[in-house]
Amino acid sequence: MKIALSTIGKFHTFDLARELYARDALAGIYTGYPRFKLRNEGIPDTLVHTFPWVNASYMAFPWKHHLSRTTVQAWENLNALTFSRWTQSKLVDCDVYVGLSGSGLRAGLKTQARGGHYVCDRGSAHIRAQDQLLREEHDLWSVPYAGIDPRTIEREEAEYAAADCITVPSTFSIQSFLEQGVRQEKLRLLPYGVNLKRFEPVSKPPVGEFNVLFVGGMSLQKGVQYLVQAYSRIQHPNKSLTFVGSPSAALIKLLDDKGLWPTDAKVLGHVPQQDLKHIMSTSHVMVLPSIQEGFGMVMAQAMACGCPVIASDNTGGHDLFENGVSGYLVPIRNVDALAGRMQLLADHPEQQREMAHKALQQVGNIGGWSTYGDCAMRIFSELHSHA
Image 1 (cartoon, rainbow, N blue to C red):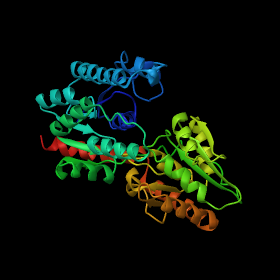
Image 2: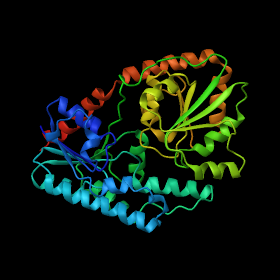
Image 3: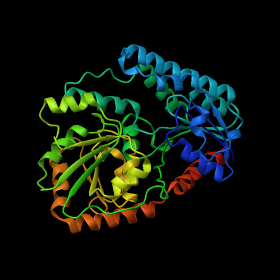
Image 4: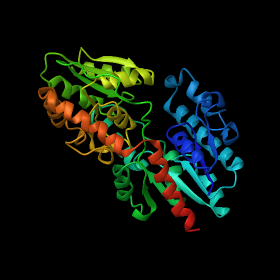
């Protein structure tokens, strides 16, 4: 069985590609990333096909955020369409084609016409559910929201309809598809892995402190607005809040204008993974209160460093850890629940240490990307056997 993949970026698709290659099942991977950025991906050049001309210029354009929303959407639409057509034209014969949602329809239909199977890989909630949750959140905070481009929604829903199956990383994602009328038998749960060689405990949280960590791009979608409110309620003489990932000056200003931004918050921006595992290892808890997220891989990374997680129900946490044992799950937008769980860990260091130990055990039992590869191969083999 030979499997081809496509992704306009990198995402988890290259992790899947490495697992398929290790099993002699990779027919090729098609990407909008430039080749020079893929040198360390562990896949032979002969199996990597690149079309970076539109995507790379879009990603690198320094003044993108100053363009009108209409212009940006037109550029994003062009990016998806040109990549989709290129993938269709270059696609090798394969038994299964797995296209990351948004640009895989043409290649998927070509594979089906050849007698193969088309898998739509969706890394988040159903796109209409995603759009609705984000629209609600922006309305709550009186922040303008242009919405997901209707052309993108149309493309994605056409992919959902045409695909032989849709892989999603969490039960939250599956539920969002069911609520949009997609049949259960078309959906497959495929949670992401974690690189257990790259993420491991390298230190311990300092005694007498309570260090709270957030990892990800700062946005309303990630629930930063609820984290800062909950953090401000924590009673501890030596607490800290650290943000790692893409900062947002606009969100910080919004929260600061409302008197919600903590004066002691540290915003580090992007950090190398070597530094990130040190930060995770020395944090007492990582909090991911996202409004919607298919599967927050940073949760597994933190757990692999011995850092317990408090996450919202809409992050994939239900598929990663047991609530109250190796982490805590809370409803979205619930400041009281967030603050209560953080205060509990701050007040009971011994419970925090026990939960950290259980988190490390739990992520070890789940396994790394190899386990993800095994699960993916079972899904693809099931499709192939029904040919």
